Image (tube, rainbow, N blue to C red; front, side, top):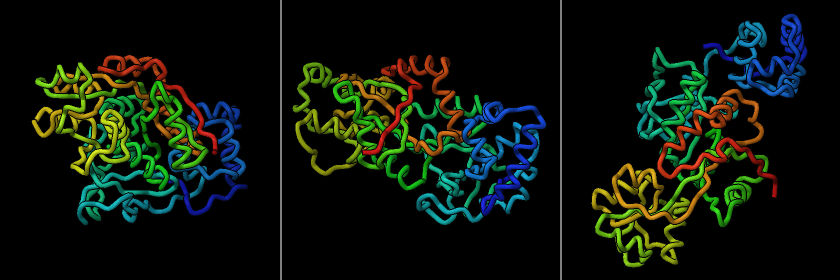
Length: 359
């Protein structure tokens, strides 16, 4: 696998190499940027030595100029995957893992189960798989049950990988703040408080972030068939056994608002689909999840509110080709149509971007 030099890049040499090859091909900085999937400003900054490109950005520029990374940036160092740090603690020393570059670091991610994680592992323990893919990898965290659909579309459209780790909005933002994922999804904004997502990011992480609208969806109460009438009447206080999400999740907050106070300490179910399955299998009588999961479980659903699902990412990585590929996909007509086919999803504003300014 070709890797760009990370330890140092000589600005004067890069300017000669990149600019000379660009001019030889009759390209402007803007034209090279379009071919590489980077802003013109990033090309200018790379040529002048003001910006050290990521591995994927270096690869994209080299492909656009039809040369190798070594031709532009010199000989690469040895692949760092074998010594990559764990993003978080693995379940065992011999755990399977995926690898990805995030914020200039090569990280290992313990293999987990989830709708956006159905991809072959890159290695196990201290051994890297001989046929591990060299495709660029984008790492996100969030609780969208349709993350698997997005991951499949992303790979089909770009050849890149999308790893989507199932986490609550609060946990996802924590990973983003630690530089362990490229982006984090949250869905606190409602029709009554449309700025809640931006405010949450500002309070937890500060400014300098952007929000990509993924969808709007229906959140509400999933319940057993025998409680259908109770749900329709809105008498949720009569329900005693609730399948609750973890503290800090938007679903947990929605449930506590419905019940008028905090819940007693109890088992937390990890995700919308898990809540619906807990009700279907008789572990609880009701829970808060999204309409998609209730319908897939074949259970009654009572809408409570419409939430906006946004993907938060640092403005500093706006020019990353992996992220640019995701932006193009999410804004495409084909993707929006697939979202509209999902129960409770609204793709009217899917693909819209907003900035989170400093406090």
